[in-house]
View 1: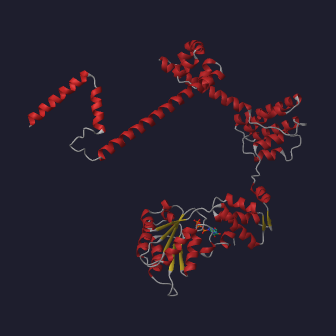
View 2: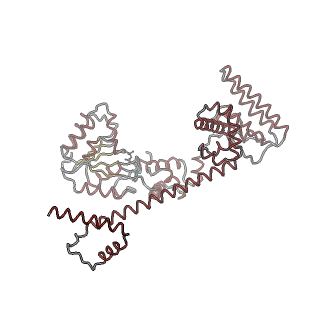
View 3: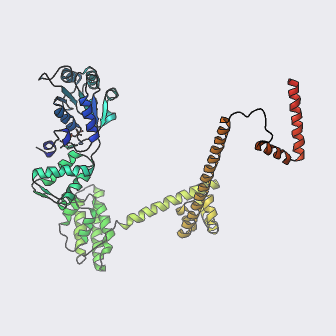
Length: 488
Ligand SMILES: Nc1ncnc2c1ncn2[C@@H]1O[C@H](COP(=O)(O)OP(=O)(O)OP(=O)(O)O)[C@@H](O)[C@H]1O
């Protein structure tokens, strides 16, 4: 029996983590009446949902009728099995039956589309407790979802899984390194089933588990292109080169570029020359392969390249810093420059209302000469980036510093704008508050106290108004009094 099954928790107290969810389940079960909602347990796989449901039934002394996705969960099966169980008592006549619907989010895959509908009917009619289990809450039919009391199960934390693994090791009589168990717990991503299974796999045929055992068993033993290049340039490769090449996940032409790109690591000029001859011969075979579509030639190309270069490399050894082919770096630089050139021409052309080709053939040189004298203005005018300005003035350092200066200035302006917006918002808020406060004040009494500070202030203001304004105010007052008089 695999350990995940062997060490399935039998009682609620055996479960690791999710204490609050387990408490909710127990309360639900202890207070269960025919009016209770069914329970929906949801969460990632392997964290104990099914085990918890079974353990609950055991602890409550209930029977279990389980329907999982492997059963043909058609409407009729669900109605027959769950429906009957739900509406009748226990076989023993006393206890209850827990109806367990595992993988409830997988009903849509059934041949009979009545599955979800049937569950809703069964749930509504049920006279026995029902537990549904799902990984994806929203993969569940909405009608079922809304009928249930939902309890979430969360992935376990690594530090709670390790003690469980230790218990299993003790039970199995295996001496274990705690750091090895921590490693397994960490890699399980909170999935306890996967942690238990990993432990099982790592300890097969052992009575001791050390952290080193784990790292070697985990290591991907396939060779990489770095291994192949290193072995080819080494005087005594430990394994046949063709075996290593077979494991490397690259085509012979890519391998050729890598080997050619690292030939320079050889010290001896004569050896380098010999290695290039082997590479050139291999390249011929590759060319013929593509021309004739006769892929058996690939093997000759690979053998010529690896064995020829290794033969030339005799005497090379020690630490080597293997790098991706320089040609790739140059190609990517050239590609970047080409795109910068095209963008620059189209930008200049757009501003000057002419085709990019015309700019290149007739105007690029004079613009470059002019830009040299006023690079910053040109960069701003045409919104150039570092590469584009560099193309124009042919000086990457100056281009870099100018673009940085422009960007810093832009940032400064943006900062200033933001600051101002904030200040304005603050002022607006303040004046809103003042207005609100004034509105909430009781209406002033009709009798105006002339000795009040407000009145003083008003008076003072009036004395400060210049004579012209005063006369126009007097005029206004006069006309107002006339109006009142008219109304009276
Ligand atoms: N909380 C837990 N405590 C102890 N062991 C656990 C726990 N969760 C999972 N396991 C181990 O993983 C196995 C599988 O657990 P279980 O079937 O309950 O998970 P599940 O959440 O229902 O997964 P799925 O959604 O895939 O059905 C158990 O038999 C047990 O060995």
